[in-house]
Amino acid sequence: MRLERDLAENTLAKVVNMKLPLDEIFHEINRLLSEHGVMDDVYALNQPDIDEKYCLHLEEGLWVAYYSERGGRHGLCIFCNYHDAVRYFIWNLLRNILPDIQWEKINIYG
Image (cartoon, rainbow, N blue to C red; front, side):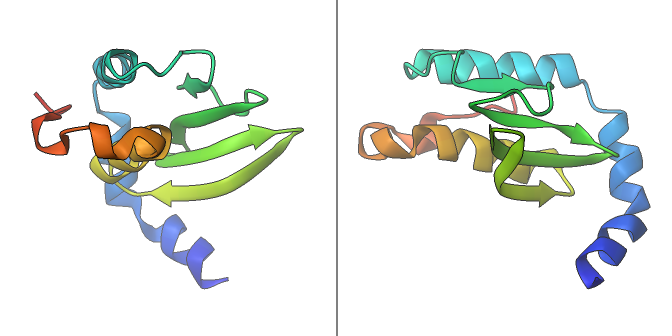
């Protein structure tokens, strides 16, 4: 499958991702979601396959985001960089209150 080959060949992104300050990134995601009323019992950061939660973590050097349910990964998205993964994950959890959020004021990257 071409996707599997492309992901396997993306070694530079994998090396970069493994050197990121993951604790800081996950802390900021937690803070931001909490500020917007998202309870921490609906998502799992840096913990794969936690049942009935939205998950975001590194897997084999790539970022994965999905909803975990009954052992399955639903809506699985794979990202080479954390910017896209984090933006997608936050949007996915906040999209229902999207009109009330001033997106230009959200800066998770410091």
